[in-house]
Amino acid sequence: MNRDKLIKQIGTFISENDDFLITSHFAPDGDNIGSCIAFHLMLTDLGKKSLIVNEDKIIDKYDFLFRDKSESYIQYSDITEKTEFENVIVLDTATFDRIGKVSELFSKDVTVVNIDHHFTNTNFGTINLVDGYVSSASQLVLEIFKGCNYNITKDISDAILTGILSDTGGLKFQNTNIEVISDVKELMSLGSVLPDITERLFSSISYEESMKVNKIASEIKLYGEERIAVAYNDQQNNPLIENEPVLMILNSIEEAEVTLFVRRADENKLKISLRSKSEFNVSDFAAKWGGGGHKNAAGMRYKGTFEDFNADVLDKLRKVVMDKL
Image (tube, rainbow, N blue to C red; front, side, top):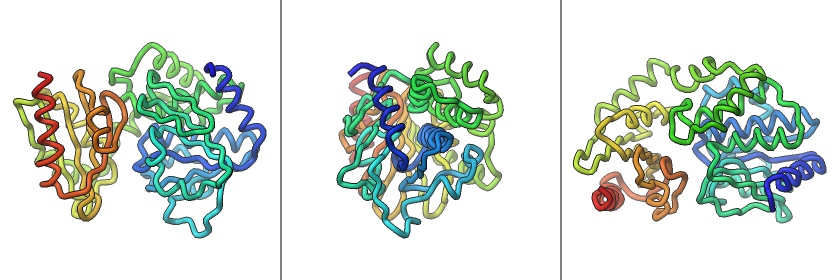
């Protein structure tokens, strides 16, 4: 099915239904959050009911995008009554399992609209609009809204721009192309203030949080021969709110082409973000452990200690990177 027909099909799905669940992958990032909020705001403006549910907490710095967070978003663990939804919109999620426990809210007769930009997407939806060549799910959301002739207000524009900026690193990553710049220009014409949102996303951090980031940064390990840098944090002892400041520091290390941020979430459970500034495909590597993402940005989980991770995953990564150098 071609792009225009898919967008029309999504528009029909929205017009024929009134109650929607919106969700995305656990550990929400800016594109995840921006695209979800944009869809919620649009459905609200169309007179529809919708609720955003994620397995994890949304970082407070994104609260400016909500009209009313208490009515728009709920963390899965806070649900008291397990309502089943027949109409679900899943954004920025490559595989069904990355929805996590939220999938328990899907009815047996659920219709799932899968909107995503990962090459590794498994087309798990009833309707699948997937394009690995766009910068973000938020960019696809803008295309859908325009294709359905929806009115894009400033607050919807702000949410979409937040998602695009997040997944392009403030328009600095390699996925920033002329289409991205054109969309940003259009969103600015709708009232979104680029410097304001950029400041909120990339240049605002509390003193307490900066001290936590500094502690992690001071212990970064560089494997110079393989050009790999690794940061580690025990979230239980040093509860970092957001990963992005550490990822930005890792990305700025001149001697490193591949970087990893490893977080201990709880006993023997690690979450890992991988980044690449070279031709090395971190998504392909992460897929060997059930993870995935993009060529230059991916994520995975690992059961075991940090020492286990070093002896297993990191050792294999060092060997693979060396073979490609």
